Length: 246
Image (cartoon, rainbow, N blue to C red; front, side, top):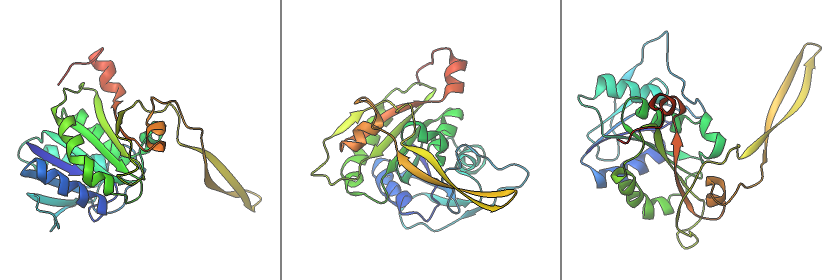
């Protein structure tokens, strides 16, 4: 199995190293193409009007090859699949993101966008996130969750979205299959200050929304479950008129 790893926190992030450590237990064909620096919350942005700069770099985990890319997470998947790798990967795994990607917030995520781009390229896509750098649950559960996801026949317009709660293995209540909450985790609240007659500064502050129903990713993670669920790529869903399995 050929695995491509990427992220939105940059190739030097702790999360991508942790993901690579797990991936090489599953396959001996693991490649990394990841942004050269932080690209959080860029959603599905791509680079236009300028060339991508790609550089092969040393990596502390024993993958086949690792490349740093000047572009966005979606760029990394596109250039890896279309130009860098000789053959298409069987799966793109994006992460491990430093922060959850759940509910409507996943729309903004570069991590999720990279997995979505994989699906657009006809490849299985998986996104993995945890709170900050809480990796104890990742060490215990991620390999098994990924193996299960890779064995599943996912719909061609879906990605698999995995979120780990910020708790110890002893506090974890297990794995729960979820649906994305239909709203963001935090409400946007702006405080405004006036700079001049014609200029203002709006500073964003987050206020928590209520926890959604028991079937949602928000509820699962808040109650110390590992959330695993599908996110739809609506364009492909509409084109497939119900979807085909692959």
